Figure (tube, rainbow, N blue to C red):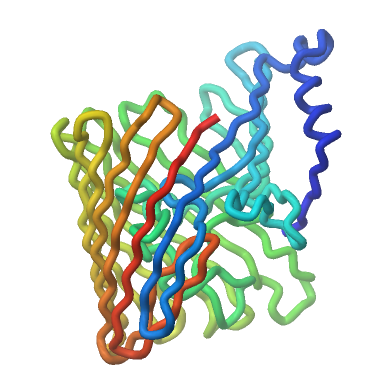
Length: 356
């Protein structure tokens, strides 16, 4: 992934562009948007505990620019540039702390046929782990079902399935199919065709779902190509939810497999409106094949809405390992304290999130 440094003059120019007369005729809409989320977290494990500022405990902090242009005949062009941020330090995700559009960098063409999208985007196999987790994968309470084999690598023997994937081409079904939705996605590792590992970094993914009334369900599967047959990684997941109004239970099953190593997650969760806020809870069991390296995690949290855009939240989570596992709870901005095989870990986080 190439990082793109963004300086204040550039941001100002983009903002001015949206109001210039010439720009108005070319763009039907241009928006600057984002999330600022920062909290205080306390993490425990077998090692020394840690306390400090965290970021993205409820929603990942970000800064973005997006726009659309009506081309006529129901055809629309669009762009989306979205950069992750660490509000606790004021840094971006690029090397040295600069901004990088690491979360999304796409151009698209959409119409009655659906949408064709090119660039860096969420992988098809990540989306279910996000949508069917009460904590949206964030903070001390978030599911571990999207990174069970580790932080995504570059198609090598280490690292898990991609969260966002570069050099991707995606096709999304149109939105008028009676609740059916889905996408197919292909990304290129861009290795030389003559290289022995010419498919390294390639990704192929598929996601299909159905959403109607209170029900939402989706399945996804994908393959991330490694530097040899033994390092190819397959990710699959299924998510289900039903909104009863007073509560929305959800179920997530997810699997990541590389060679003989396979880890499977089964998580049940629920969200429930309570007054001006929302209660969140989940329990997950993570099973490692042919070993005693399993672990369990339970999380409970509450977010109180001060307005439509601002929320204060608190979450507590507990993790217990079997003898062959040494997992611990960490958050963005504050790394996990670590634990010994068979040990336990816990996390407490309170923070504030603001949409803009």
